[in-house]
Length: 303
Ligand SMILES: Cc1ncc(C[n+]2csc(CCOP(=O)(O)OP(=O)(O)O)c2C)c(N)n1
Ligand code: SF4
Image (cartoon, rainbow, N blue to C red):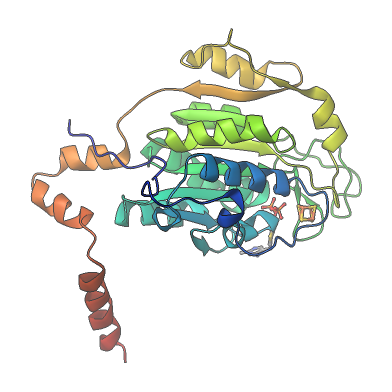
């Protein structure tokens, strides 16, 4: 089977250097102390230490406090509608396999309204990285419970306590067939940066759940700080059963790479399945002028 190399950290030419500050977009407007700052710092660290070419990186988001992320990173970006980050990121990757695509979204965005997309993006093994900003609450809309809020937790929208049991995102990603599954904690920034780097280097769909406290509506910082522990070298990330045990039975909050394997990506399968390989080659070649002319001719039809 022919292999199409798609996801990787695209480097700048040797004579161009960018500092961490150069990778920052507009100033974040999150609440002071929000865990999302730690995630942003980790991503900036990854971009700077790998001297990533921002013109070959696209950050895609849904709606929520996490949805503001693309504006804070110097790269291409797309702020989509609620829950639709994965279809947008998938479409972008298929149209432009030369871009590295980083998709981000909250636990509400990804596990409630967008939940239908997650197992399908995973099983397609599209070569994108998905960071799930998990604060166990709807931050942007002021603190309604999300699919990961603990049972019994009281919010203004659940005054008698949440009645449903929470989803386990790691276990769900594993049983859906994800080829890279990890968990990070926004306040362990260096450790988180290593995870994000490995996820972005991974060929295939990489899923990273990031515990990120919403200090304004559900401050889990102290609990997560006290219970987070780094997965050690005794865990074999290629062992699926061990990964599932870690995701479901481990005490506290294990953080690190839970599972990693290799499988052909969606584009690999497409390439292998297409009889007319030249058609695929033509689709893969990106010609801005030709594409602009095509887009213009389509728009003309509706003028
Ligand atoms: C179709 C649609 N339904 C509902 C909303 C309202 N809404 C905006 S953000 C959000 C949830 C945000 O929670 P989460 O995804 O966990 O992100 P956070 O704000 O915590 O980062 C909701 C329900 C919306 N914008 N669009
Ligand atoms: S509401 Fe919560 S998630 Fe949103 S910016 Fe503030 S602290 Fe962060």
